[in-house]
Length: 245
Image (cartoon, rainbow, N blue to C red; front, side, top):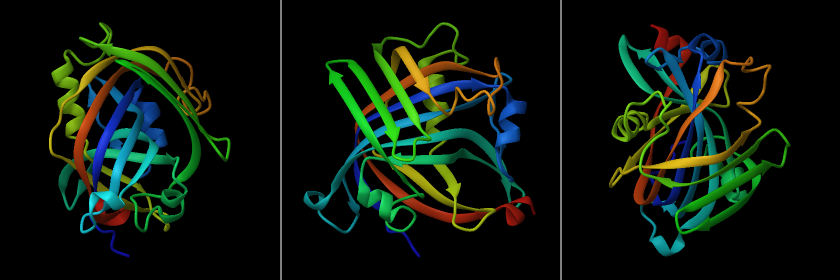
């Protein structure tokens, strides 16, 4: 089923990023994806995004929906008909919207899980917590806007980090058929990131020692985006067999 172009506004988007041993990340990723590396390390993380005015492009903004959402992401590369592509693989999506949950993969991008979000925002301070109904996902991030990234970040500047994630606007997530991946591209009217100084971060996904052995995954940095008009555009499904060829 064709998914219409979805339009809305990114009210707030926090990208929480981890440095990951690329060999560990490679074991997690399905074919045809492989880790996209920065200075010898892989990058993965969580996108915590509040969307408003979300609706098919042909509908007026007054009919749009508002929701809190989370996507676990891994920066990846892959070959598609012999050409190298880049983007993100998304193993898990969570949403506060029961409509998104029910319509995920049909009207809205990707299969969705329902979760409870608790959000506190005051001036340039943010705290976002989510706990999924199925008990599999817990995330807590608390921080404040900062002028620069942490000194130990793999990125040498805020501009370098911003450009890295701008190029990862194409995302693939598992389709209903094993080995097939639904593709969605994020298009924005503007792209501007700020650094977020994180005071506390918790993630059931990245703290899972069975998935990430001790020392293989460390928090790197967080970025903040606010007030950006955007569209979600469906992209052709990716199949591991076709991509490999």
